[in-house]
Each structure stands twice: as C-alpha cells, then as structure tokens.
Image 1 (cartoon, helix red, strand yellow):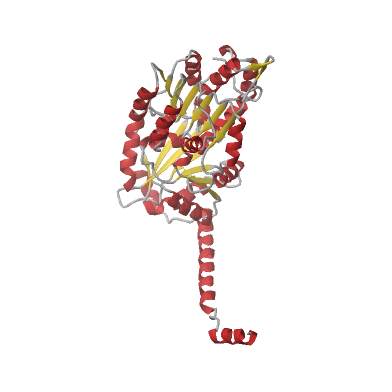
Image 2 (cartoon, rainbow, N blue to C red):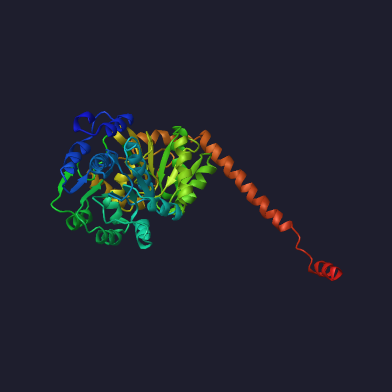
Length: 444
C-alpha cells in the first residue's frame, strides 16, 4: 500500500516522502486505520518493522487537525496532548528523533525526557510546553513529583516496547501514571512480543481493544542469517577476535551478559588490535552517545553493549550482531538480533555458546521454533567427538593468522609495560624522614 493512499495531511506526507518512504509496512497498514478510528490497540510485530511510524503518523495527523487555533493559526506547545513511554533512554531518543523528522513541516512541538542527564534543561523545555512528550517512566515520575508538567490533557498514551518495560520493573510507575491520566484518552500498546505479562497489563489499561499481530509471535526476521558457534567459555573472546579479524568485519554490535563482562571484553578486544567502544547502564548518557557516534561513523569497529542497547538502537544497515553471552530471557534474543536486518534488509547474527549456555540456547530454540547447528571452528573444539569434516583439518599444524599475531604482540607490550612499572616502583627510594624533619627545623 502506498503512503499516498492513506490520506495524510499534505505537510505530513511531504515529511514522510522526504524520509524515502514509498509503501507502508504490514504493521503500519493495519494499525493506522485502527488508531484513526479511535480504538485502543494492542499490537505486536517483530522489531524493525516500522512500529514507530505506525503510531506516530496517525497521532501527528490527529493533533494537527484538532489543534487549538488563534486568528486562524494553529497554537502549538500549550499542553501535552500525546505521551509516549519507552523503557530505555536510547529508544526514547530514537522515537523523539523520528517524531521531529515526521513533524518538520507541521506546527507541532515535541520533547524527550530520560534519566542519566541533568533535569534543569528538561524542566525548562517542559515549562515552555510541548504537544508530544516522549519519556522513560522513571524520569517522568521525577518531573511529576516536582510538578514540572501536567498530564491532565493527554489524549493519546502510547506504551512502546511494553514487554521490556515490564521486564525492567516499571509496572508500579505505569500504574502511578495511569492514576494521573484520569481523563478519557486512547491507549496504544506496542510490543515486539506478546508475553503473558503484556496481556495482563493490556486487560487493565485497554478498553475493548483491537489486537494486531502481523507476524508469528516471537519470530525472527528471515533475512537475518543466524549461527551458533560451539566454544569453551574461556576461549570465546579469542574466537570473537578471530572471526572479526579474519572476515574483516567493520561494524559489529556485541552483546555481553553484564556490565563487568562488557568492560573486560572491550579492553581485551583493544589488546587484540580491534577498536571497541562501550554502551551500558553505568555509562553516562553523554558517554553512551559518544560511543554510538564513534560506532556509526566507523571510528570503532565494535560496540560492546548490555541489553540496554537491545531496544532503541536503530543503526542503518548494521551488518553484524554477536551474542557473546546468551540473554537470560529468551525473548531478548529476538530483540538483540533485531538490531540487524531492519526494514527488510539482510544481516548476520552469531552466538558464541559454551556448555553452560545450553539451557539458554534450548529456551531460545523453543521460543522461535528453530534448532541451530552447533558450528565448531577448527582449533576451538571441546573434548568431545568432532564432526567428520574437521578431522582432516586437525591433522594439519595450526598457524597463527595476522590478527592472532597482532593480539600476541599487543599483549606482550602491555605485559612489559606492567613489569617495567613494577620494577621502577621497587627502585624508587622512600623519602628520608630525618632529612625532611631537618629541613623543617631550618625553615623554622
């Protein structure tokens, strides 16, 4: 279906076409008419299929048509008329950016608030007023407590990535917000997956909703090539460096299980001669933004992240995603690999799996209805029978490739620096207390 066929206002259609949109995605085709009809909505579509445009385009169209006017001109930014909640800062920033783009020719103002940054600039923005506010629940509650905003005029409430918000423990905040927004409004819940918790929340918040599910629940894109590499836990980093180096991968998003393991992995990749940046919850928003900018611009080859980046990172044409550790929740696997193969493009996702990860892999396979071949790379096999195709390779002596040589060289340089520093500290003589006291006596 063409974007011309849904009757968007001229200026909104102009902005959409400026983005290069020509046809609507399945979720957009089904959701836009429902939202325009005024019904509450519970919608599920796999990540990267255009959910943001599915709810922002009809909301923008409705806000322009119903905006208050003075002397024939639209008055914008007086009250918050649409509130969009997201689970992470990255997703909030991405949604806000899309809204700015779609509304560039409209008399509509928008803003975004999230944690990790100072509140005063956000307070100033809120006092001036916006038509559409994108927010993370925690920071929104902070501003409500400070009486920096008024939600009594909200006509559209959107919960984006609702399942993730519940996984992150935002249910109490959501209930608190619903008490604040008591007036009649339209509620839209969008999620990459339908979990039982999402369905329970939908029953509480939505009134006779329409349900849309454009793809099989918890499915992954058919255009993403998925592979599992069977390797011991202690040799994962070595294998990752070799895969990136030998194949000359230039833009790789790597998911680690914890902030601590992400820090260690990024440090070790640098020792292997592979430039890497970090993105996780302990980093300030400024540091996370810089890391993302360096990654997208090509200054670093690898972005090591925790699941804070599993949703909201929208990197154009991201070719590779690696699960260094499998996620605890099987559903998060869908979101992680959804960072590649977006908008119908192809991508590659690999997972490094050790024996202790098998239970997580079993859960993922059960969720997506697929069983992966365990690929064993020669030189990284475990103490178990190998597939026949690898036996001949094992008879040949293994040679270091240039990336392994670079790694060993960098690690040797780092070791020498550490040794030299230790020796210098031992050689340094302690300050003589007697001489110091004599100098003080002379000065006196």
